[in-house]
Length: 349
Image (cartoon, rainbow, N blue to C red):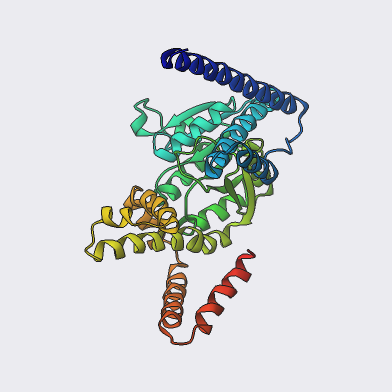
């Protein structure tokens, strides 16, 4: 048998295996749908299945990162199939998304439509002529406008929406309008939501989503119910604690990455040269700070500038840099080693 015949036979065998792989994936999705119809949460979507995929990847010679990515894709699709089956039996809602033509607005619109809800986009950019007045009969309204506009939209919705309408924002910060949220939550279903992911995510499976309690337990429970069943990790916190946490989770992580590529730029060495000499750690950092560099500068400025907890975080950042710098420059390794050991203990690794 010549090389051409051998190649043809091998390609045919690969196609047969591809068909089998997709057939097995389809079978997994079918089982997930059945679990959704039963109404139970699938227990096989967390760390245990990730560990299993890593082990299976090692067995067949697959790169561990590739095995993890394959695991993520399959579990996301399984979670979506489970959720779609589950929501077939649930009441469909009329949901308005104010700012639904923005990046995060589109993501929320897509999510609710995938869940089978009727979604109305209220946004001048949508070109449909709708305003907040058109949210008056909605069961729920999501506010996905810039932080500086949330208070105005809350007031407009309060004037037109039914008393039982759930109203929530999805902003990255709450302090600029937190008093409005708490005031409204005393007499109607108002809470605050923060999806801890960007608009490009394919699924919210395994992603964190924060529901902030502004004083209305009914709103918190209903908001949680809207996002349940999609595999997200939902965390409920008091709205007054949100921005303190975000000064570190968002503010610190953003500023460290911006500082990282600013230092590289200031070095005068072309980035391509750094990439050609990069280590594993540098590559991981590069993936992160490049994604930060592509984000909206005005949004990142708001996250830094409007967070009233920013100054404390920045002081602690300065102190942390001082501690590490002094320990690294010391002739005695003990201080540096202690910093790393204390970090390891804090991180529980």
